[in-house]
Amino acid sequence: MTDTPVMQRVRDIIEPIASDLELDLYDLEQRGATLRVTIDTPPGSPGGLDLEKLALATRLISREMDHQDPIPGKYTLEVTTPGVERTLRLPYHFRREVGKTVNIRLADVNAEQRRFEGVLVAADETTATVQVGEGDEAVDRVVEFASIDRARTVFVWGPQPKPGGKGRSKKKTSHNSKKESS
Image (tube, rainbow, N blue to C red):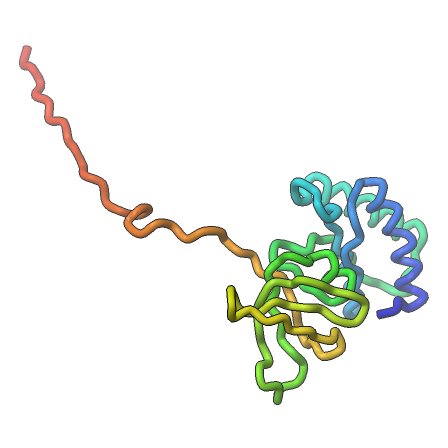
């Protein structure tokens, strides 16, 4: 996906700010009168983006956008993070999320299996490879980006609690004490 000249100017303004803050410009979209700037910590970072750094990035981006005025007319600036379950639109998004569970919906409504979920095992400029199934049943499914309607990462909550562990009622003990009369 190629940027328009206006979006390229916006990208040229935002990327140095993100870089100075040790952040990545994850995505840049203009939908109607809204300019959505999605920033994130670089891949492999130990933590996510905290609210203070997001607020700082918003102030710096807003100030520079007002100063350089790259977008004709009025617009609303929205600076956000991709969140836990991230939308995957660009080859870069897929390459960045290799090793994670993804959910994909194909554009072809007549596809034999339009929706599927699995582990993203590889991605290049035109395709993503998703391992669907587990163990001996696992198969690699190669999907062209052009055939994807929607894709996102799936947050996996971790191991299931042991049966009878959490929420089990505990035996209550009570202490009765008598007041001494004086």
